[in-house]
Image (cartoon, rainbow, N blue to C red; front, side):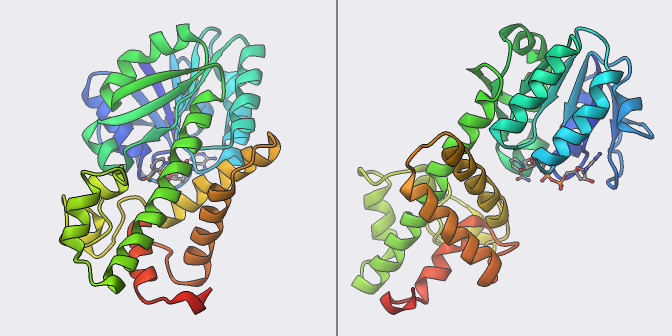
Length: 292
Ligand code: NAD
């Protein structure tokens, strides 16, 4: 397929490179980042989009997506697909989809889970919102870049699935870290804690797959000095998006709100920026009940 790829950062570059390696004709553009091998460089997003069957965007946020989409859409051919893989607010995803539909294009919002490692290995999970037909046509690309592409419904539903998933993840990681810090104070070994919880009803991905305690369970960022992995800053971004959505749709999400506030404090006031989101455990270790 002829693919335009806008946003060749930490995630976009390996995704575009995998598409080129698989034999797709990929033209890329980024304001700052270099083009990966196999991808033809375009001087602008518009140039990358011209003649493409699918234009993929992998950008920092919804405001940038709206701006870039407004430039790309008039340059795209009727019937082409605008496939946004960035994590953005649901309202921006739906606004861009409306604009694309008015121009005779199809839009998909397809945020990913799996991080830079998943992007490099081509094992991302895509959560896809938009027309069924566009999802089916984009499947060969999803299959190269990822292991799974779940169709979640109409425009914006991919972003909705992503922020709901990450709201669960953020709150679950926090409480898993709290529990380890409490167990320490109770004299319960971390290994015993892991052995029990990973096979009991407190079990979660945060415990069994991404254990925040170094030296316990499978290898995770905790074993690598809490280098990300999934950065606390990105978790904060996603928790803010879930609160923005909860506010605009009048949903009561007290634990999601608490998780957002805690990651904001951690990232913005306590030096958590640039660390993995599981570095909440060393944060809790040093704290007592008076520290709130
Ligand atoms: P990044 O900052 O490394 O990449 C974004 C790229 O977009 C940058 O290279 C930037 O120069 C480029 N860009 C910005 N404005 C542009 C414009 N107008 N035209 C062209 N290029 C432009 O970010 P990333 O880590 O690759 O993340 C991209 C998206 O994926 C974000 O929405 C993020 O939330 C999401 N995401 C990231 C991860 C992760 O682990 N990094 C995991 C899941 C989802």
